[in-house]
Image (tube, rainbow, N blue to C red; front, side, top):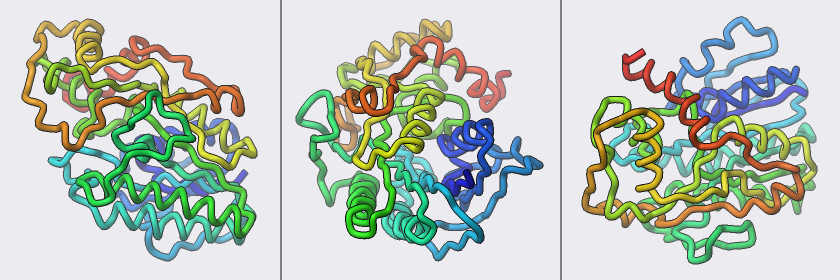
Length: 319
């Protein structure tokens, strides 16, 4: 197929490029580098099946020729308020990527008869009142809260995607992505794994907020990409959770990072000042992914972290 992939220079987008090119597809990668990095796709230079267009997907986009599928992965996604590439500091761009960017991509999909896959997020569930989170749960989101620019952009994008499917008959799919990690992550991303793994590799105590009882579920990037590709090949239109259902507390996770990395720095408990922003529990119900796609994660936490460490060491100048 000939596939348009927005956000191609991002963490997930670049891994999707690799997987789809390996399967013989032609990729038109699009990114404006507001959060993505040219380094993530530098290895694709010279690949005759990869074409790159530097473009903001929120503006008018045109792709000549037939487009068989569109994967819309362009959006700031970092929850780190100190990061210049995080959505707290790019609020308008984040909303536009979810609204105008999705609209522009859907317009191409409608014209070309393309399969369209929207990268949504577990953040549409907000701070959930049910656990684990199934696709039928409508969420607990504050539309004017600090995280709203990301949460509501993705919720609107899902609504717009379903409107194009129901009204125009566009062949759409929605993937709700849970916590994912692996090589090419932004070390300043603000999520638990980059924060803790970076500290561990530097021999520092790992920062745990509160008593560390808040939970997360961590999916290795290769597993996530496999689920997304399976969804693209399927005919499923309703949202599908893709993530690892193995839930653990942040304290358990920090202890595992110290053990895997050999860090002797221990744990540093900090006041839970982030509680206003962070969901306290996050775990995907992946029953639909198992049934519809025949998908479930294969890479365990220890193996995934060991695969990720060389990239972090290189970025930290420790390799």
